[in-house]
View (tube, rainbow, N blue to C red):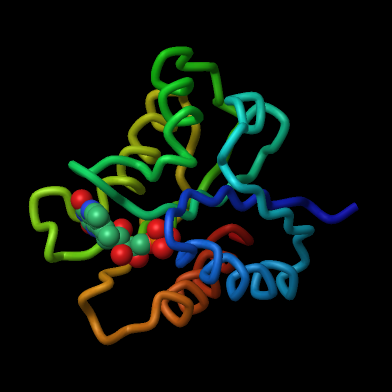
Length: 152
Ligand SMILES: Cc1cc2nc3c(=O)[nH]c(=O)nc-3n(C[C@H](O)[C@H](O)[C@H](O)COP(=O)(O)O)c2cc1C
């Protein structure tokens, strides 16, 4: 049976979803079953039930995770479940105009998952909405490298 990757979406205006739509086929071509879930209404159980998760989230407010990701993020922070069986990757979306809080949505998830004992695979991708690069293209390029790292 193919290993599965669960993509968890944190978004307000839908960019993270677009990125996930383009990243999914890259992961599928590498042999994974892919499921994409909106973080809204999820509990930390999602990290227990899956061994490989890809966080795909933007940043808002004072470097906050988007509203649909807030309950899940805060539950992780409070519960700090043992996620030592979890491997994860992070695609962060931000805008360097917000210099003090650039891409903190993704880095906040990275930190709390690390605190729970999970192991990040690869570098955090950080897309800058003020750059010329399309987020979907950045995501696809990153995902191609990510599956190589996962395979080794
Ligand atoms: C009101 C508002 C606040 C934002 N705050 C931040 C921020 O603090 N840090 C950051 O890096 N990006 C910030 N951004 C940029 C978004 O994270 C970025 O545009 C992202 O691509 C949006 O993704 P989404 O459509 O999936 O929500 C902000 C955008 C808006 C509209």
